[in-house]
Image (cartoon, rainbow, N blue to C red):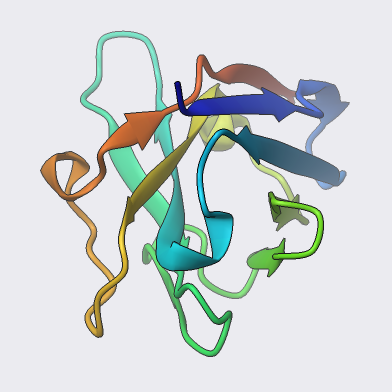
Length: 125
């Protein structure tokens, strides 16, 4: 059974940085596009970033562009999200997701087949 396990969340002051990791198992990791989404209380799940199966392409949501960087290490079956210049509005549960590889990087939740349990990120002002 496919498992995605996020780690690296926590509490950080505004302007600080965090690095999230998502370790995958029971899947051929290099066959999947990977993505990060987030969900704040009372809001819908929001696309954050995606990366293609070869790491050759990335795509970011407008709210994080220039501050967050998605990367992956196929040898370690892990995808990362480096978050810099964090703002209070970045506070949310962050989820990683795996979707079938495709030329176009998808931004909707329905395009992803597998999800992690989430990790909480809290940015204090």
